[in-house]
Image (tube, rainbow, N blue to C red; front, side, top):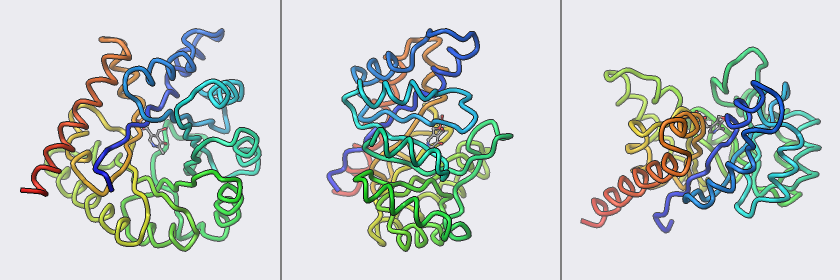
Length: 251
Ligand code: PXP
């Protein structure tokens, strides 16, 4: 671990705004280019089964035109597997998907869904795509990810971000414990969902986390100060929290 914390910028909600009117503006590929200039280390996009934001054409253009590593969030379906194998993104993060939910509300059940997930993890891995499983910060889920052969897990930070002040410490402790369990069992650990300027610091300070994926807040904040500024501020808050945590470790 070199201590650097990567930032994956999720550009789904640029497509949400575009789709409110149809047409091509604002273009998520343009946002991805700007994110690269502003300090993103990767671009994340979720092609949902109902195509409510990112479209098939967006995925094709992101794969062809963006130099940063592309992280394709996908449900474990045959259709999404075919699309992933066509575009060969750097990484694929398998997420649970329900049509009626507004966003990805919970983690994947890698324990209960083991047999279903197994061929997806295998096919993506054989194609050279780095597979990540989006799971709750629960050691049993991480052990199932290892048994499935996934090299990466992404911890769902939604419960931590949504918690009130009394509950937040408890939710953070779950993430801290899960991240160290991930390290102990040899998984690369990522985290994301619901992170904001106010909630990112304590998660960025967890040294066994290598990457954060952040979208909705950055795009919302861009309305007020611009996308470049919102990404740069997030990057700075992450770097500051990480530097402090590294300093404490070596003190
Ligand atoms: N990580 C995963 C696996 C997700 O599904 C999402 C939402 O698409 C995110 C990170 C980003 O969450 P948010 O948009 O709330 O920052």
